[in-house]
Length: 121
Image (cartoon, rainbow, N blue to C red):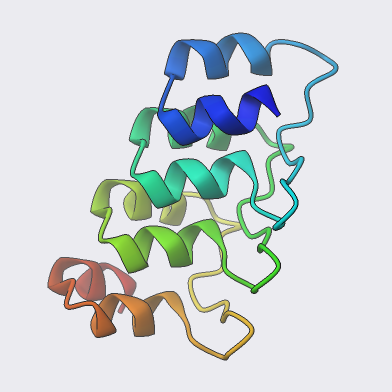
């Protein structure tokens, strides 16, 4: 969808315009179950993540087909700012595992993201 691509590419202005439309579903996934929030978190686009999280109808725990959440991807990639934004929402589950049972903390530790591990402990 246009929103998925705008989120993936970090185009905050476009994301904001699209989110203002009533016919745009901010949780609509692609064929792999990846949502605009997941793509923005994966790519480290803090501004887009903040825009999406400002909406109560955005599900921050929605996993892709492999059970990977936006928090897991941000932790995996070492995007501390994105992890802080996600953890600031009370409904984010910091311990939600993927389909293999690995958590955001596990991925942060595996990839050597020390600052991320501190945030997730």
